[in-house]
Image (cartoon, rainbow, N blue to C red; front, side):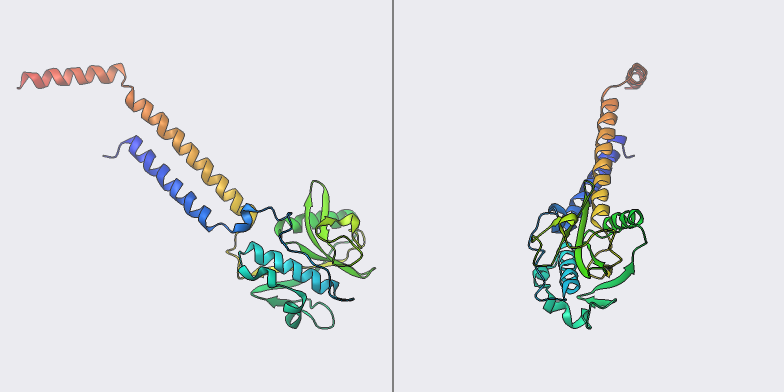
Length: 240
């Protein structure tokens, strides 16, 4: 019959093996802060291609998250044949990443709330477009109450900058492009991966504590157990 300590140890070992396997499968991006520029951003090559440049930067970041070696090769020119038709197509696919188009609600407060939620679902960012300019940027993240972006316009600082420093605003934004599906992805986002790792670690710690407590109980016999053992030994001696 399997003892309690042995059962707990087997459970702990299985959890640790699962955790180790999971860590080897995590994308390299999980260990890297996406807010640190690894070469994601660039300026538009010519006037009128801000949406194309922003989409290329979005796809570049997604490819990086997917662990694709060729993420740095995603450029305006590389996506143009599938993404451009006198303007950025509302729907296109590049390297198994499908991009779609959607409109934002009216009102700055509603737009802000919607964009925060969208960015949580899309760590690679979205192409945010302001028809009144007209101009587009790659909206990258919402951190500590601030929206950040990469503006492909040549008159704006390069790299990741606060949206307040860019050529458009939340109030003026009207629509966006985003990655609707990604065949390169395993279906688990960064947040889900991190949560899964935390859950595994918590389960392992709990199992370890249970195993330790059980071992202590097993190694500390009660008075009742000691008495029963003595009686059995005495009975055995009568029949020797």
